[in-house]
Amino acid sequence: MTLEFGEPASIVVPTVVTDRLILRYWRPADIDPYAAMNADEETMRYLNGPFDRAGTERLVTHLAGMWVLFGYGMWAVEDKATGEFLGRAGLYYADGWPGVEVAVSIRRDRWRQGLGTEAIRTALDYGFAALGEDELVTVTDQGNIGANGIARKLGMSFRKIATVGPWRDNNIYAITRGTWAARTS
Image (cartoon, rainbow, N blue to C red; front, side, top):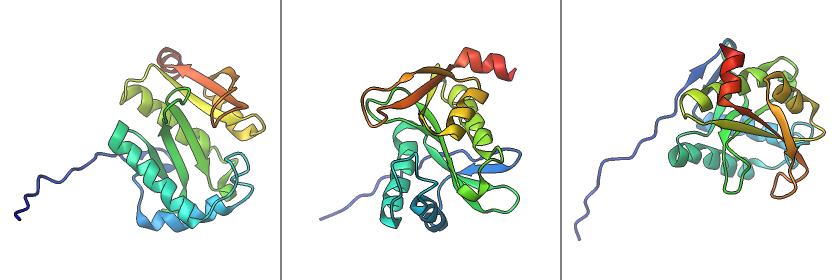
């Protein structure tokens, strides 16, 4: 039996640098700090509860795989000054989702520093400029004051409370390309 191998496949995941953050592709070294974050009950209170390292590995491979399938996904978020892993942010879509979603989850000890807003702003820029999306959404638990505040601060409009799907009983906020362009020009 003779085997022939084609050219290896590759994906392009842009690294985006903001004032305080580096949004980049996932590394094996991200798994342990992300697993610690996902095991924290307070961090995961509005994200379907904590889960273990094996669940974190499955989630990271899912998030990384979105770059292959869709050309976008979730970045690992790194502190630009220290190199520390801070969480994840980017764009997400699954079958039946209410639209391409911008989402973020930052380590609890770094909450209330504007890092989530900075990361979501970057995801909105990327979604509109690089992907050409006409509208982006975010799905937030009704009780998550921080996530709801980020959506409003960035000019996203409350659309509705979802009645179906895994986001049932969550707020759905949306913003159009035109509204974002007017806010950022």
